[in-house]
Image 1 (spheres, rainbow, N blue to C red):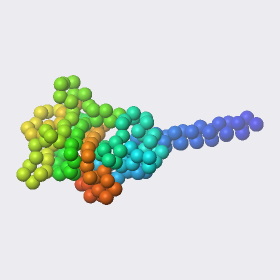
Image 2 (image 1 turned 120 degrees about the vertical axis):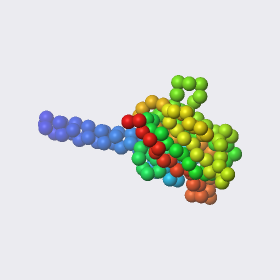
Image 3 (image 1 turned 45 degrees about the vertical axis):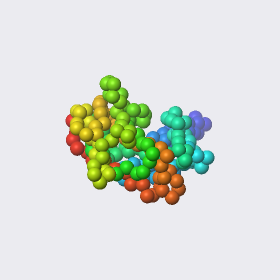
Image 4 (image 1 turned 60 degrees about the horizontal axis):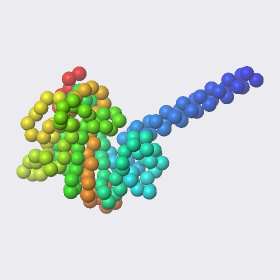
Length: 194
């Protein structure tokens, strides 16, 4: 009798532990059901629509973000560089390439909760499309790190995981025909302090 009760409790503990762990992983992952990828960038195009899957809805509810509908725009998140290595706040990166067409876009550096990094200075770790310097061919080079650099510089301070979030507003990539035409800039690690 006691043996059966212990085995039942053990089975329930394993089931709840593995089930809860898998849900936690699914909500934290920047891939999975409903995701589209462009290089190191991931988006969930159905996030602000009725067609959103249960995991996307749960991710939005847990993070407390206001998701955009397809007609409004789309947000892409990068948690790794173009070589697949996880992004770290103690490293400097170069984000280089061409951004897709959009009326306006923002790019910011985020912590593990996808909140903008507070640099402790008046300047936040964010840039927008109207302030970017572009090369003659239309590409952009954005450098990140804790030391100011000439050109487009995105300040990043602290240690731990790093995410880059780019949100496009009023863009053709948010339509069903534009999903796979969107190519976003690459992310290259330049140096690390640790």
